[in-house]
Amino acid sequence: MTSLDPAAGRAAAPLSFGGPLTMLTLCLCGMATGLAIDLQSVLPATVATLCLGGHSFVGSLLGHASLLPATNLFMLASGLIAIGLGAPARAGSGGPAGLRSHLVRGLACNAAMFAGMALAQWLGPEVATGLGLSWSLSAMMGAMAAGMALGATAVGLPAVLRRARPFRPAAGRAAATHPAAARAA
Image (cartoon, rainbow, N blue to C red; front, side, top):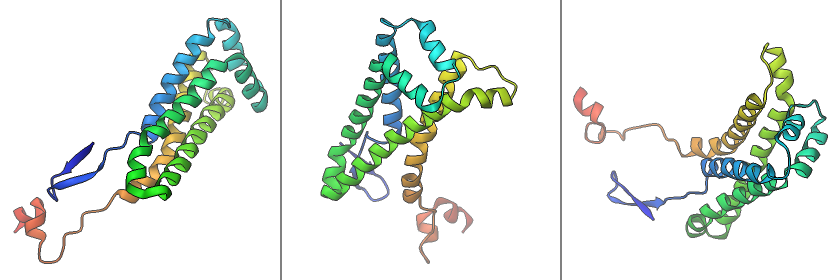
C-alpha cells in the first residue's frame, strides 16, 4: 500500500506498520491477553505480592517468568509480530541491508521496552515513596506501561528526527513554494 505525496504528485514510500508504536500497542495487548490467561492458574493476590513486593531485580524477573509464562510469551510474540509487519516494506525499499537494520531496530525496541518495564517495576516503589505516593497495583501497571513507552520512544525517536527536515525555501522560489512567503510578498 502506498500513499500519494501531494507535493510531488507521485506515490510516496510504502506505508509501514512495524514501528515502535505498533510494537508498543501489540505488546500491551499481548501483556493483557497473557495476564488474563495466567490469572486462570495464579491467584491475583499472588501476582500482586510478586509485583508489589521488594524483590531484587533478578528475583523479580525470575518470579515473573515462573508465575506469568503466558504474559511473557505473548509479549515476546507480539514484539516479533510487530517486527514482521514492517519487514515487507523494508525488504522492498532497502534490500537485505534494509531488512537487517529493520530487524536490529525491532529487536532493540523490544529489548528497550522490556528494560523500561522491568526498571519501572523495580524502581517504582522507591520513587513513589520518595515522592510521598503510595505504591499500588494500578500505579505499578501505569509505571510499567510508561517504561515500555519510554523504551519504544528511545528507539524510535532517532529515526523520526533523521526524517524531520526544517523548511528551507530554495533561493528565488520562496513565493512559489511556501504560502507564508506568498502572502508576505
